[in-house]
Amino acid sequence: MKSKRIIYVLLLFIAYIASGQESYISVIADKGDGIYSLLRKQGVNPYESFDDFIAMNMDNLRDSIHLYEGRNYKIPGKLIDTVSVAASDKNTGTKITRSEGRSFPIFGKGHETVFPKSEKLKGAVYYLVSGHGGPDPGAIAIHKDTQIAEDEYAYDITLRLAKELLAHGAMVYIIIQDSNDGIRDDRILKIDRDEVAYPDKTIPLNQVARLKQRVTIVNDLHKKHSGQFQRLIVTHVDSRSKGQNIDVFFYHHAKSKNGKKLAESIHKTFHKKYKKYQPGRIYRGTFEDRTSLYLVKKTHPAMTFIEIGNIRNSKDQKRILEPDNRQALAKWISEGVILDFESGEIGPIR
Image (cartoon, rainbow, N blue to C red; front, side, top):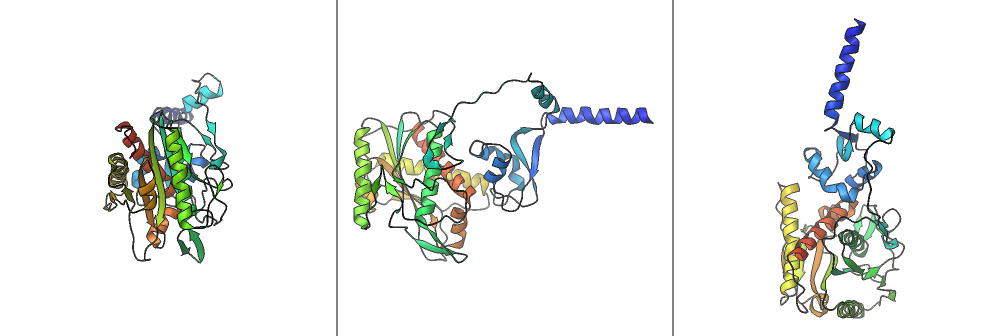
């Protein structure tokens, strides 16, 4: 009887090792967990593994992006492999090396290191402008008796986008900066007034003066990098009636062929992502010319002006309040930017 039990245990062990080569470690999502926080807890880089996680757990996600509390989720890159673990313990396994990252304090504690992913954007220069800032918080809305401000969420998405672009080899100028905020993984982002314009200019109270300041900064930098591939991306959160739920919109200069292509490339990426991750929902965002907007009209680089959603609408609030959603937005925008660069041209002004 004892010998039969030993044989049975051995068979189970062999089956475990054989299947372990293709079995991923799974963990249970706790209350409040998002994809990024769950991956961080497991020591996995969420920025590198986000798409793999979604692909592996697609049938176990709400709206193709949100976790269910109490359910098991597979963690990409974490294989159950007894043989490999044993080899690693004996220091006989394959040594894995990783490219050294660069530190950018503006991204904040825990986010400051940028690890290279590729050189897809090598040679490209991007100017990122988040809407409002300093004395102007932009649109103000109420979420569960707490005030939320447009500029804080536009800035967080812009920082996440900057980090993605840097990881692919781009040169990035963050035009509106807040030295003590960084990327924040909170739902409610504290409102402050201490943002400055690159490199350390006080942001004027007057609206026209603020816009002129940004135009001057961008155009001066554009002249400095003459002859290089340059693009400008402006990020805002829209403000409409509470009942109006909108998708992400992209605007460009009416006479800018390259600006139109940039807006269209990001728009195509969003359309593709919605089709993949939210197949039951139609993406209604558009790209169109909006030359009447001051920054669109006056800046020199080919550009796109992005409206993320309606800060006053409860459904759109969810899009910007969830840090995982803000990261997904930044990543999707970056993929559209890469698409634009890979099929682009330097071109003249505009």
